[in-house]
Length: 154
Image (tube, rainbow, N blue to C red; front, side, top):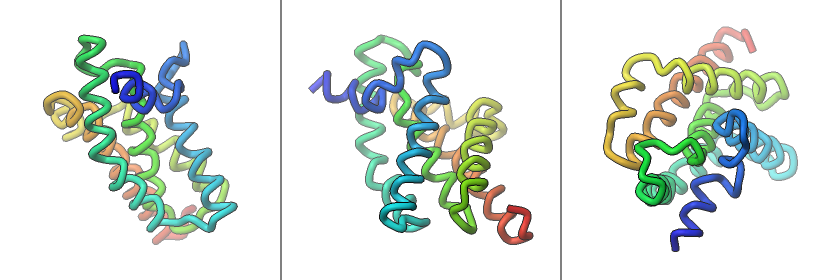
């Protein structure tokens, strides 16, 4: 069970990338979303559903991996970036290559910057803090994408 938890928490190995594993996890999420959109017509409903369906398992595998590594927020855990990235895509008015790039950049900006209240959310216990701060960053990114779509900036 530990191996499975770590495999999913690292998003099938993305978390082991030596430089910027969170960025690699985010990129993997965008690529998956892009493929789902192009080949299956996935949009908002699919991305929000994926995020919600994966939320409880993500918290569990993040908690399990944090305990195994004895770190509060291990760098190898990137499933939180995957969920945050998918949540960011929910805000896109249209799924163009520009919006996929914008979603990626916005999510990474908010995930690294951690504006209020993201830094506080990061203090939640175990997997809740690991995952929920990235969901908050995803909400910020989704809001900016949505506003850009409303004002036809995208």
